[in-house]
Length: 399
Image (cartoon, rainbow, N blue to C red; front, side, top):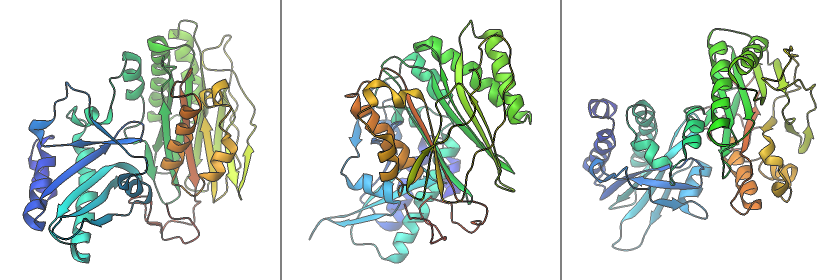
């Protein structure tokens, strides 16, 4: 199947998968539903000729639906619609914890175990097909945006990692961002190297395109330094230098975190940013590291590399001040973090953001951004990280 899909164009590859499933399983219809940027809805991508990217995508709200149950549980659903009716099968399309979307089929009969295995394998292969093809076409971007983006929001989204979540043996990480009515310049980023996982959360001053351009400077400087092999201190120094040389008197707050996958040690820099939160043994604690000046604030200064106390089983939550705005005070973050502890980081991050949006009656004065990191430790190398739900370590909650 992968070979046939790879031979097709980036858009037609979805049609190839659908045609193969219809031929092999007798499916009456096959659909791919892609999750939108917010994770609150899915958009059905039809045949290549039916996708009109000039029109807004028609979304299907996830709340209280079977689609939502499948995404959250990462378990397929089989619904027998009654005598003489087709059987609906929904399977998660996920790669390393990144819930890309759903595969939906309508079959003539209830599938047996072998058919379900084939559907599951196809859904997993479809995740790779989407990842391989999304850089060549705007169709997937079209499906993920249920409302047109402003120029500032377009710039902001291009600064985010290609996958908003990642599952590995030692950790799981996910981020979520809800732009304000006037984009405030928030970003988050992560990368996994051979021996480290690195994360950053940044917040540029101001709004709209000016804030997005400041965010671009900092994210670009951090990535450039990181990809050149620079340590955390040098990454912070280059971000600060880029802001002072090109930031037009603006500034950006941020947090940088680097965790060794060899010994579990951590390095952390806080550049004028809200302190992170950690949940351990059911208790939420605000970690209070030393705070240095934001990137771009004169005069030139140095940054202090600190360590964070992270133990297996901890969840670390890094956020921006949009999560703490006046309108967000009705949302008890500590209580929300506790109540979402059993959820995968991607679902926890979305739930936290959703609560802040609801507290603001759908309108935010500042961007709201959150990153959730579950640290499993170095003794969990046998965990199955394919979907982020099938854990071989029984001490970890299934999500």
